[in-house]
Length: 139
Image (cartoon, rainbow, N blue to C red):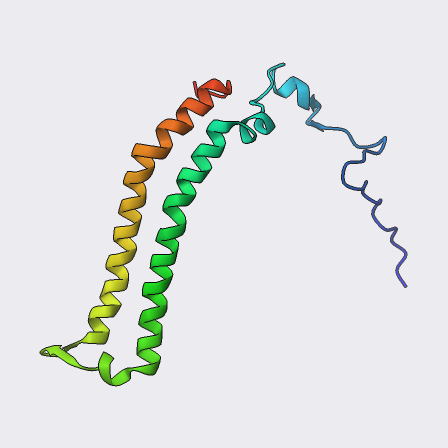
């Protein structure tokens, strides 16, 4: 048996005990914010602009995710169930499987490039507008 005392029990989520308070090094949480409040995240999440931004992002991301998964799973399934086809030489020592494998890297880079361009044109400007209207603009 041990003679050590157990650590004190923590308060449950959302509860505060008398001994715990929001401070760090003697600085209260409200003092650390300098009296400023941050953006109203609940209000932003409920806004029509944010909803449109999320649906725009989903309309791009979901099809690209499905495309990538189809390409990847197609490659894996062909490698597992059609080894003769994947081993078919195209030229020299280069076969279909090798071209499909390199195609995985190419498709990943292509999808990433398309997403970056999409985000720069259609998402980032809307995020900046939303940030400014919410009062959370960057200095």
